[in-house]
Length: 410
Ligand code: AMO
Image (tube, rainbow, N blue to C red):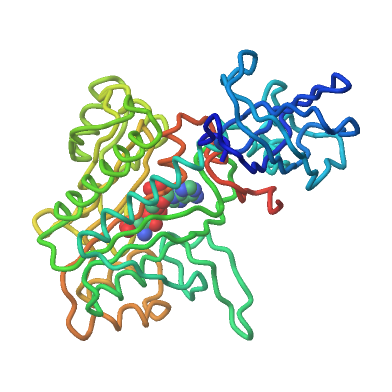
């Protein structure tokens, strides 16, 4: 790796030709790998001809240098060409000439060669690792559930249909039903990092048609506040760990406060953004709330039950309210969750209320007929968190190969 070489070492380095200067007898390569660039001075290969982004193997000795930017250079014994660039580069991998997002995504293979683009995926890797690491060390079990499912969980309109032999099936919008069954089955505390699929037709900067969901589900809770505590702790750990690793201490967060939906509605109305109790937050409401609170992260709880998914438990004291919550990060909803209904008859009733047929959910409802602990959990969108952590303008930036209405390749 280029970053770790020291003067005096004999090295073999692999990388891309970032720049090539040919002065006849002497040639200079700026050799680049993902850790940095180094100057290579070539004095013994007069025929060597290179272009930007050719891939080479360099053997040589590292020495201090007055002219090289990094203060060291490699005096080459041999440069071996491993791959030649075959076409004009459609995206400038140095980023000096900017490209549109569409073009960059089409040529992601070149786009990724820019350090600032690679950093997005380094941050995403740290965020996902911190999520897993935190839960693993607290007795949660990582589970894996199928992406091919028979029923909708988050509203019927946003499903991708698949032909599953003679039957119709769907791509999972969420591992919701299965993480619940796993917990009720006795795994008690589980987490997943899994693709979710949403056939949302609209193109927005916050929606992907395939995203990565970080899911948690846990049994034997008193109410949703037990889950909110885990959500806050794991989220803080994800952000603070990643801030440390990425050298972005300004991103660290401390306390995450909780407000009820009713408090949020009051705050919005008081500050001139009209909203009726019972309405779901629009993007404008979310933006206005962020401007009022001016906090990087906060949790809103106790949404009206009717605007939440069918599996949300109602508050026994005020059934208009669902034991539910959302986490907002830099003004964007990044996670949502709830205490779940664990009484089969109540589940059936909530399904019917929403015009859904309990028969379609029989395998799920059945799981609650053999003793089911009170339980709850949440799902968190990894790309949304990455997007806000890295201050990106579009969620597509946070997905290596994003799927949207018009994009299924690369
Ligand atoms: P929900 O539908 O709110 O809840 O999704 C949870 C989180 O997943 C992310 N997300 C998305 N990210 C990018 N593009 C999308 N199209 C997209 N859809 C969702 C968001 C969102 O907050 N089963 C419940 C979770 C639970 O209760 O455990 C669920 O799926 O960050």
